[in-house]
Image (tube, helix red, strand yellow):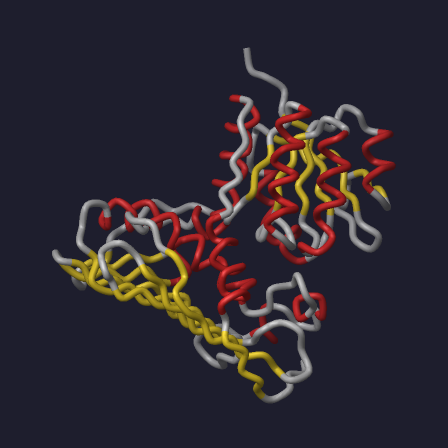
Length: 310
């Protein structure tokens, strides 16, 4: 007998919620979008609440929430939802600090809830094939080039320039989530140069260098000042050939030949994973991409650059 779908509430109705979460929930038979929580946004035909506490009190039938607000505000919402016994999906990055997310993981276990810290780029269609190709190989060089136009992707979003907003690491952490998923050996950050606009609290560009057990050259270049074509590439030279993962993980070329992939959406895969975690009573909270970002702020050499204005 088929089970009833999990009723879920979306908390924070901004661009990412409308573009990705709403259609992905609508296309997944395991979930039903039953409510939204936002001071400003709503979804047509779905009950709307101005705050999370009211929704939790009035809708005990809603067993899961997806938190889509900026990371600086996410912790208190997640604590409230977990204390009420609701499963929680966290947009990336899962919090403003590592200690916050460790505490959420503890609370989820205490209350018998699923906590899912999502990294949407790991669910890009070509990432599993890239991981499989790298397994067992000697890697000589891996270079991440992740350059985009902040004005296009975050127009007017001042929160991203405040402490906790990560600056260029907001997209850069997507690349790091792929790196930590596909790289077959442990890596740690060796050095970083961080470029801060003189009027902003988070970096607009970053250059990272990693170290690992086999001596490979592993680097990452992040920049939010890219105009024209946007670049989200990872290139690898290995002992048996060359691999290029591009378009944020959507395209894979090995030794000049494109590897065909089945179509699919990142967030559709995220919600399938969330349903599986709830069904099996587990959590998924991998903080390795966030560790690299924290290390970059610890080790990074600060470089002051020209002011940034939208």
